[in-house]
Length: 149
Image (cartoon, rainbow, N blue to C red; front, side):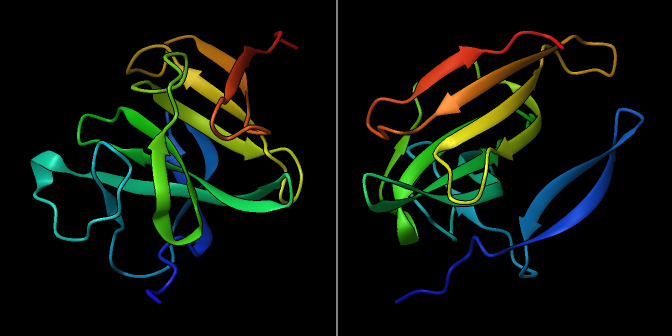
Protein backbone atom coordinates (compact mmCIF):
# COMPACT_ATOMS: atom_id res chain seq x y z
CA UNK A 1 0.00 0.00 0.00
CA UNK A 2 1.46 3.36 -0.99
CA UNK A 3 1.67 6.17 1.59
CA UNK A 4 -1.18 8.65 1.73
CA UNK A 5 0.14 11.75 -0.09
CA UNK A 6 -2.94 13.77 0.87
CA UNK A 7 -2.17 14.06 4.57
CA UNK A 8 -2.26 17.81 5.04
CA UNK A 9 -1.06 20.56 7.28
CA UNK A 10 -2.57 24.02 7.30
CA UNK A 11 -0.41 26.97 6.32
CA UNK A 12 -1.14 30.64 5.87
CA UNK A 13 -0.42 32.31 2.58
CA UNK A 14 -0.70 35.93 1.55
CA UNK A 15 -2.96 36.11 -1.52
CA UNK A 16 -4.20 39.35 -3.03
CA UNK A 17 -3.66 41.28 0.19
CA UNK A 18 -5.57 38.93 2.52
CA UNK A 19 -4.46 36.02 4.65
CA UNK A 20 -6.12 32.85 3.41
CA UNK A 21 -5.93 29.34 4.84
CA UNK A 22 -5.01 26.67 2.31
CA UNK A 23 -3.71 23.15 2.67
CA UNK A 24 -0.47 21.72 1.41
CA UNK A 25 1.02 18.23 1.40
CA UNK A 26 2.77 17.64 4.71
CA UNK A 27 5.71 15.97 2.98
CA UNK A 28 8.52 17.93 1.39
CA UNK A 29 7.64 16.31 -1.92
CA UNK A 30 4.73 17.66 -3.99
CA UNK A 31 1.95 15.33 -5.15
CA UNK A 32 1.38 15.29 -8.92
CA UNK A 33 -1.54 14.09 -10.99
CA UNK A 34 -2.22 14.11 -14.71
CA UNK A 35 -5.18 15.76 -16.46
CA UNK A 36 -7.27 12.61 -15.81
CA UNK A 37 -6.67 12.85 -12.03
CA UNK A 38 -4.30 9.87 -11.92
CA UNK A 39 -1.49 10.02 -9.36
CA UNK A 40 1.94 10.03 -11.02
CA UNK A 41 5.03 11.33 -9.20
CA UNK A 42 7.13 11.17 -12.40
CA UNK A 43 5.25 13.56 -14.67
CA UNK A 44 7.12 16.21 -16.64
CA UNK A 45 6.28 19.78 -15.60
CA UNK A 46 4.22 20.42 -18.77
CA UNK A 47 1.99 17.40 -17.99
CA UNK A 48 1.45 17.74 -14.25
CA UNK A 49 -1.00 19.31 -11.85
CA UNK A 50 0.17 19.84 -8.27
CA UNK A 51 -2.31 18.79 -5.57
CA UNK A 52 -2.89 21.62 -3.08
CA UNK A 53 -6.13 20.52 -1.39
CA UNK A 54 -7.48 17.14 -0.35
CA UNK A 55 -10.29 16.01 1.92
CA UNK A 56 -12.01 12.72 2.49
CA UNK A 57 -15.78 12.53 2.61
CA UNK A 58 -18.38 9.84 3.11
CA UNK A 59 -21.54 9.25 1.14
CA UNK A 60 -23.71 6.13 0.85
CA UNK A 61 -21.45 4.44 3.44
CA UNK A 62 -18.44 4.76 1.10
CA UNK A 63 -15.29 6.84 1.56
CA UNK A 64 -14.04 9.13 -1.23
CA UNK A 65 -11.47 11.87 -1.73
CA UNK A 66 -12.03 15.29 -3.20
CA UNK A 67 -8.75 16.81 -4.32
CA UNK A 68 -7.87 19.96 -6.20
CA UNK A 69 -4.68 20.51 -8.12
CA UNK A 70 -3.17 23.51 -9.81
CA UNK A 71 -1.63 23.66 -13.27
CA UNK A 72 1.43 25.86 -13.86
CA UNK A 73 -0.81 28.72 -15.13
CA UNK A 74 -2.81 28.72 -11.86
CA UNK A 75 -5.98 27.07 -13.20
CA UNK A 76 -7.41 24.31 -11.01
CA UNK A 77 -8.56 20.76 -11.75
CA UNK A 78 -11.04 19.18 -9.31
CA UNK A 79 -11.05 15.40 -8.92
CA UNK A 80 -12.88 12.72 -6.98
CA UNK A 81 -11.62 9.20 -6.29
CA UNK A 82 -11.73 6.34 -3.88
CA UNK A 83 -8.90 6.43 -1.27
CA UNK A 84 -5.34 6.09 -2.60
CA UNK A 85 -6.32 7.53 -6.02
CA UNK A 86 -8.39 4.46 -6.94
CA UNK A 87 -10.93 5.10 -9.74
CA UNK A 88 -10.03 8.80 -10.14
CA UNK A 89 -12.16 11.06 -12.30
CA UNK A 90 -12.21 14.78 -13.07
CA UNK A 91 -15.27 16.65 -11.86
CA UNK A 92 -17.06 17.95 -14.95
CA UNK A 93 -18.15 21.42 -13.82
CA UNK A 94 -17.09 24.44 -15.85
CA UNK A 95 -18.07 26.78 -13.00
CA UNK A 96 -15.12 25.55 -10.92
CA UNK A 97 -12.74 23.66 -13.23
CA UNK A 98 -10.00 25.56 -15.08
CA UNK A 99 -10.70 28.57 -12.85
CA UNK A 100 -8.66 30.48 -10.27
CA UNK A 101 -9.75 29.16 -6.89
CA UNK A 102 -9.54 31.47 -3.89
CA UNK A 103 -10.93 29.15 -1.19
CA UNK A 104 -12.32 25.63 -0.65
CA UNK A 105 -14.15 24.66 2.55
CA UNK A 106 -15.76 21.37 3.48
CA UNK A 107 -19.18 21.80 5.11
CA UNK A 108 -18.61 19.63 8.16
CA UNK A 109 -16.43 16.66 8.99
CA UNK A 110 -16.60 14.00 6.23
CA UNK A 111 -19.40 15.95 4.50
CA UNK A 112 -19.83 15.50 0.72
CA UNK A 113 -20.60 19.24 0.44
CA UNK A 114 -17.92 21.87 -0.27
CA UNK A 115 -18.07 25.64 -0.69
CA UNK A 116 -15.74 26.94 -3.38
CA UNK A 117 -14.84 30.56 -4.04
CA UNK A 118 -13.78 31.32 -7.62
CA UNK A 119 -11.84 34.41 -8.65
CA UNK A 120 -13.09 35.46 -12.08
CA UNK A 121 -9.69 36.44 -13.43
CA UNK A 122 -6.09 36.47 -12.34
CA UNK A 123 -5.88 39.59 -10.24
CA UNK A 124 -6.78 41.00 -6.84
CA UNK A 125 -9.57 43.17 -8.24
CA UNK A 126 -11.30 40.36 -10.12
CA UNK A 127 -14.79 39.56 -8.81
CA UNK A 128 -15.39 36.52 -6.60
CA UNK A 129 -18.20 33.99 -7.10
CA UNK A 130 -19.25 31.38 -4.54
CA UNK A 131 -20.45 27.89 -5.40
CA UNK A 132 -21.49 24.77 -3.50
CA UNK A 133 -20.15 21.47 -4.81
CA UNK A 134 -22.35 18.54 -3.76
CA UNK A 135 -20.74 15.12 -4.07
CA UNK A 136 -23.58 13.11 -2.49
CA UNK A 137 -23.49 11.18 -5.77
CA UNK A 138 -19.78 11.31 -6.76
CA UNK A 139 -20.57 10.08 -10.28
CA UNK A 140 -22.93 13.05 -10.79
CA UNK A 141 -21.63 16.03 -8.85
CA UNK A 142 -23.73 19.18 -8.76
CA UNK A 143 -22.51 22.75 -8.58
CA UNK A 144 -24.91 25.44 -7.34
CA UNK A 145 -24.23 29.19 -7.21
CA UNK A 146 -24.52 30.66 -3.70
CA UNK A 147 -26.21 33.97 -3.08
CA UNK A 148 -23.95 36.78 -1.91
CA UNK A 149 -24.20 37.61 1.80
